[in-house]
Image (cartoon, rainbow, N blue to C red):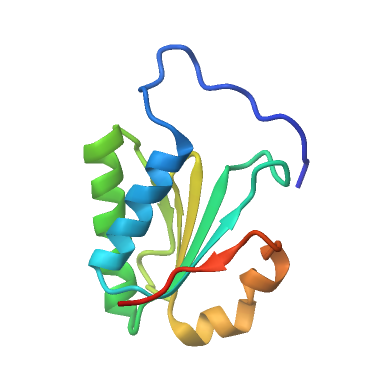
Length: 130
């Protein structure tokens, strides 16, 4: 992936920060009981997004549900039309939330691809579960 300065949002863009979107994403996946939530800071490492969130659902049905609700919440709170791939199978759903990229996995699929190992910088941390 190319690394460099990211293009600024158009001046007509809504007034919200990547951190506000990240906080909403983390709250949404927590509300929907996602497991093993990991947040990765991509600033300065990728021009695709500022943050990546990786989490797991216990089943294909929960993965799809977490993803649908998250996309709806991003649209309602920020007007973000999140693009989603993989919801039909529910094994791995990729959600492009603009400033935040979200991966929702079934545990077996997450173990197979191990995205954390590829992206995990020293500043990433696992969000504690309640």
